[in-house]
Every structure is written in structure tokens, then in C-alpha cells.
Amino acid sequence: MNDQVADFRADRTNLTALAGLDTAPVSLEPYRSQDWFDAEVRQVFKRAWLCLGREERIAAPGDYFVQTLEFARAEVLVTRTKDGRIRAFHNVCSHRSNKVVLEREGNASRFMCRYHNWTYRNDGELVGVPDQKNFFDFDRKSCGLTPVACDIWEGWIFINLQREPEVPLAEFLGAFGEIYRGIPYPNADRSILFESRLKANWKVIADAFAETYHIPAIHPETIGATFASNENPFARPISAQTWGPHRSVSTYGNPEYAPPPGSQVERLFYSNIATGNVLSAASLDDTEVFRRHPAINPTKSASWAVDVTWLFPNFQIDVSPGGFWTHHFWPVSQDETRWEARFYIPDATDVWSRLQQEHYIARLGEILLEDVGNTERTQEGIASGAKDTMPLQDGEVMIRHSLHNLHKWIEAGTVAEALA
Amino acid sequence: MTADRSLPAGFEALEPHVAYWAAASAQQRRAAREAASMEEIEAFYTAMLALAPEAIRSLEGRDMRDLEGAPLRLMQLLLALAHVSMATELHRQPRAPFTPYPHEVRLVEGPRILG
Ligand code: FES
Ligand SMILES: [Fe+2]
Image 1: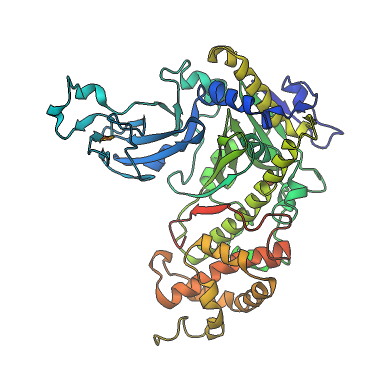
Image 2 (image 1 turned 180 degrees about the vertical axis):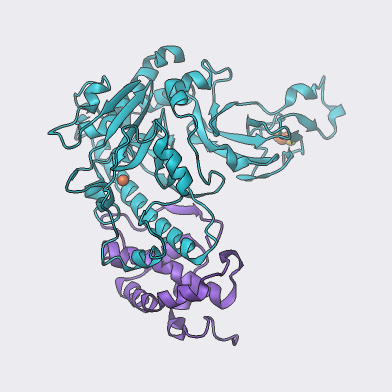
């Protein structure tokens, strides 16, 4: 592990050097080259463990969801079986390859393919074939759904598209997987989802959520005053850490933030509670566990806002004193991405908490639009070929670390080599 | 309460805003605000903010899952106030500066209650 602390008050920070990365401008080819994209799909997305979200989403036996993986032209069906296990399968019928499940989520112990009514149990076994006698040497047992490798870490569901994953999930997560044990995920069974398809390379979107340098410029009214202050005018991170291909930064929050006098609605909606925390979805108990956990806000800074943790290659978990949220960046093509931002929030059953929640959601909508509203323009700029490289500053260290590791995986013949 | 009055007694002044702003889902409320002009936003903001403390008081103690009819519509107006305040209190224009419109960034799964 590389553990780095920055003094954001110093003349300059040194997170990049401490992470063992060079400081030269980085190539833009990974953001616009079809060859590079094809290599990413083959060497990264089809070899790495990919997170599909929380297991609480399918809490009860029979619960399932279907995840589209455009880059692999695949759909993965994730189920919870009677014995409580989580299983994953290709959503493809063993007869003539029709899609079996057409719904996006639900609860069912069996799935019937609509083409010829072949029926599968949610553990993948084929249990019904109309007019089976008229097939030839038919072995029903060997005609189940094709499994996809699936494992759980701390309640997070991961899949791997290698038929026999080269490395187990625990090895892929490495030291990160040890250090991030025991973190509470409040309201993990209920969430809201923002989604968009964007005409930009997946890394352009991921990068937009990986640095705070942009906050004073892009988010001046929505969160500018929350994440920067006179003490830290450029919203420099507090610290950064890397573990193999994974990485995290701890970001600065203005401890003095209070809704300005003009924000009458925000002040009214929050007037019945003592704290003016604008991102509050967690109970005080959970907040205490966050604050005490050695991996969260690792420097125990009093000016802590959010830890942005980016699991290689395309998944980010954000933890703040008020709760957690996630981003998925799913490559569709070289210059198209499906982005999912999921925020885990409690049920608000009284008027005050429901209004606070709506204000939170309304503000989120604005912040997210500010973030991704920029990305298609950025992609156009990259695609123009005007620039060969981009300079990255110290606060953009996660972007540099991401590109560094993508390079490594693309060049590595084996996953073990990529992780070495 | 009579059938032709859509809000609880005392909130008649808000009747002209019900048709447009009392929307069922958070995404619809967000979309309504994004599609409105600053004049429309300000008219609703001013009228709603004036009655908001009283409206909240009238809904205190109510379980948000059980609202229907007139109180539900009043709550939907309060919820819409959160969205219009983005325009009046943060951006001082209908939408965030330099963001695209129309756009495809959607709240595709809202909260379970009044979402
Ligand atoms: S393709 Fe599914 S039953 Fe024939
Ligand atoms: Fe941002």
C-alpha cells in the first residue's frame, strides 16, 4: 500500500510522487483509439472482477436482477437461491440462445424462456423441456444456464467474465479488501438511481468523479462552498492511497459550511434539526463508525468531506459522514458510456425528513448534471486530435493511477502479472 | 372538504399552481422545474414559500406513506419547492449554468415514498 498525506496548505502537494507515479503529461489515445478500447475490453473488462452492487438488492430467496454489459454484448442474470446463495448466469437459453429473462428485476424461483418454454430454476438448472423425447441423446443436466463466476466481498456482488477466473476475488482486491472490512453501509437495501447514456469514453466520465480540482469551477453554487474554503481555495485532497490497481482520495470539506441567508428553502427544511449537514442519509451511529474506521478519512482530518474510492477498473464507492453512494461507468463503445449513480437513502416517513430528502435529491440532480454535462464536450475536444496529451496536476492523481494500471493490464499476459 | 377543492382549507391561494407543480414523482418535479421559465418558477416559489411553514405544520405527525387527496397534493407542492429553489436560490436562472438542456440525466429510480 502507498499511503500518502498531503498538506493542502503547503505550496504544493506530493501525492503523485508518493504513489510512485511519474509526473509527465499523459497520452489521450486511451480516450479516442478504437484499438485501445478493444484491448481494454479484452484485457481489462473481460479479466477483472467487476462489481454489480449490493447484495441487499436481492435480499430474499428468489430475488433477481439482470445487468447489461454492453462491452461484452452480454446480460448477466444474478439470483438469490433458496439456500441464500447468490449465483450469476448468462441470460441465454440453452436451446437456441434466446434471452431467458426479459424483466430487469423481480422475484421468481423459475424462469421460462418465451421461445419454446424451456424452464430453469434460479440455481441455473434446466427443469422443464416440452416434448423432450423428440430430442436426440438429450442430457438435461448438462443444459443448465451458463454460470458466470460470482463472489461477494463485504456485501458487494462481483462477477468475472473469465470462465475460470485466473485470480480469486480476494487476490484481486488485495490489501484494499482487508483494510476496508467492517464498514457499515446504511440503507444498503434502498437506493435511488440516476442514469444516463453519454457520448464519451467511459474514462472521461469516471475521471469527472475522481478529482475535486473541478469543484470551485463547475459547482460554484451547488457545492462550491461545501468543498472549498479560504483555507483550501482549490479543493485540494487531504490524502490519497493506492492498493495495487485500486485507489482512494480523501477530500476536503469546509467545516464552516452553513446554508447562506438567501437559501430560504434549505434553511426552512432543515430548521427542525441541529446540524446543517447537506448530505445526510446515515444515522449518527453509522457516522460514528465511519469516523472511527481506520480506512475512512484515514488522516482523521476535521475537514473531511468524502472518501472517493475507485475500484479497478470502473466502480467508485463514495463514503461521507452522511452515508454512501456508488458510480458505475459501463463502456458501451469507444465513445459511449452508460453511467449509473446510486445513492443509498433511508425511507423518509415524516414531512420534515421527506422534504430534506427531496432537497438533497434536487441538489444531487444539479451536481450530477454539472459533472457529466461537461463530458460530451470534453470527448469532442479529445476526438478533434488537437491535443496529444493532457497535463495532470497532483490533485488528479487517481486519473493518472487509473491510466497507469490500464496500461499494465493491457500489456500483461496474465492477471497475476497485471497485479504484480 | 368539497370535491372541487384540490388542496386543504387555508391553501386556496396555491390552487393555480396545482396543475403544473403537484407532480407524483421526484423525476417529474425535477423535469417540471427544468422546463419552466424563470417567471413561472419565481411565481410558484414566492407563493409556495409564503405558505410553506403553515403547510409543513399541517402535515406534521402524518405518515408520508398514507397521504392521499388534498394533503397529498399539498405535500407534492412542498416537494416541488425543493426543486424550484435550485433555480431561485442557487443558480439564479432556471437551470445550472453551462449544462446541456434537454439532457438524458434522469432519476430512473426514485425514493419509495412519494418518489
Ligand atoms: S430458445 Fe429458449 S426454449 Fe427455445
Ligand atoms: Fe463534481
